[in-house]
Length: 278
Image (cartoon, rainbow, N blue to C red; front, side, top):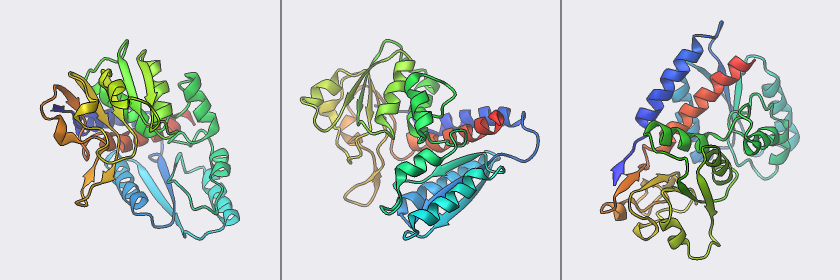
């Protein structure tokens, strides 16, 4: 398997962001990162996003709230962030604690500042093919990787393992937009390995460590591993058992160093697009 890494794709997006920034008069666009509680995964993503914004010449501010904040108090705080004219885009780290109604927050967020596609307005735009809606950053990062490595999507058989609204479903719409033929699979799909073997582009987004091994992958397949898990040795790993694919022909995104490296670059790109649209 040939590894296709995220760093060159991120660098390419950085050039695009730099060109867009030249069109902005005044201070650099500002990202508001909203986190409730001390979830280690959220904190790790927050650190990565802050670092990426700085590297891209953008501003960011973290808004952190205690895990036991009430639904009413959080909505008041979120409303203020939403209305802040200095904030061009918002990243809300989810899931939120159970006492906060996440659906209400998704409906509250300004679609023009919703950089990760959680607003019902943006979701509708993505599913209808409207390019003015922000898609979730990870699915768009998958498309960016495929384009950067000149991997054709038109007419290709794409299989996605995972049907979440975070990755699987919106990614299916983005792939359809590129004229791929898309199949979405999940834990109840019968004969899953056989279906996956037919894929020319296989996206692993099940959220289960090393779920897909060589028996799921055909020859000359491009495998995009979206999963971020911790294995039995405490090391980061994807949804693909990468060590079983060494004898396969094709391409594979590594974990870490693959799609994740591109996701925060897409977030930065969305931030500048949101600022330009103001």
